[in-house]
Image (cartoon, rainbow, N blue to C red; front, side, top):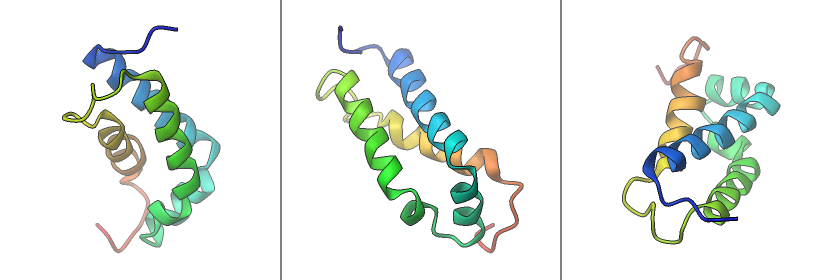
Length: 88
């Protein structure tokens, strides 16, 4: 399998991985946002997702853009802005 070295493809992969994490861990996402500990609750899943992302993207390609980190904010945080929390 060829490694990704295209920004659009890398961003799409990152969003897909984080979307899957959110989908399969809805309760943790809701509790994590509500209690402001989402990164602690999803630490294992986010690490596994990052490892998968890194295996699929050419080494060093995403050092500047950090598409995976952007996807975490866009998918896990922004999409769940309706959850009541002290952090908003």
